[in-house]
Length: 105
Length: 195
Image (cartoon, rainbow over all chains, first blue to last red; front, side, top):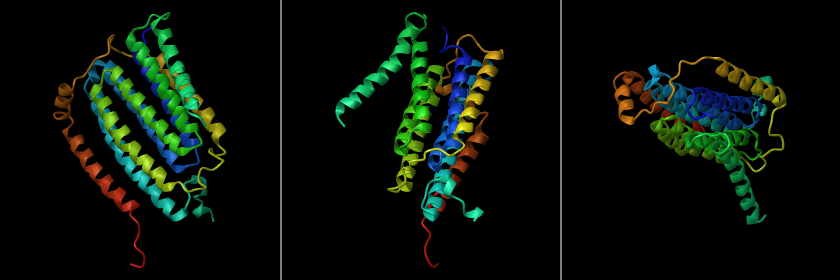
């Protein structure tokens, strides 16, 4: 029993969270739910990066720094993505992505 | 609707979370860190599933906060306290509030619709299971050149590397954040009529 001290458990956990995020992104109808699923996937990848940083000798300080960079870029992505959703909502009056069908009419 | 429902739910959740911890520390012979890892991982996965499956989107947002907090705890267990602190500040503090405000701005009275999922939800679930299996098999089948004990990186060592080797990405990220703020304000701004 050596869960907290093996790289495998962190990576498997990160893979599970990534799969949950993938399902949410493909299956949800609400645009904000899809953005939240993208956040889950970004967090899963971040967990993998931090795990590599604390278990691989050559990545000791690089892992956490790359994770911090990913966080900053994710914050930028969330800002722009949510404002795009709000702008679309102002035009179409609905947050559901399957009703954004202006190009098919 | 009585308060006993919430009490019962809390007790049930605590039982679900604490039972694996007791099993890990007792019969399985794990350490306290292992129990902490199991509890946080279970909390993260359960709340992550709640984010993608619950009907009411504001509850999805609240479950996302729980998921981010559990992930911050896992960062702490993994030995990166600075990343855990940044996770709490950036995700729990900033991005969750942003998402909750966007939910409040975009949900009308008739918005919590009956259909939560697209018609492709079944294939999406199959794909998610396939991804999880692939990652699990690949990870467990690869011999990582890992150290026996996880390394803890202090803030000063991190700062030394950040401001020596990673100065250029650091500055680029600051410019990117400024651009994102300006772009977000521009995109979400209400258009003026007739100009």
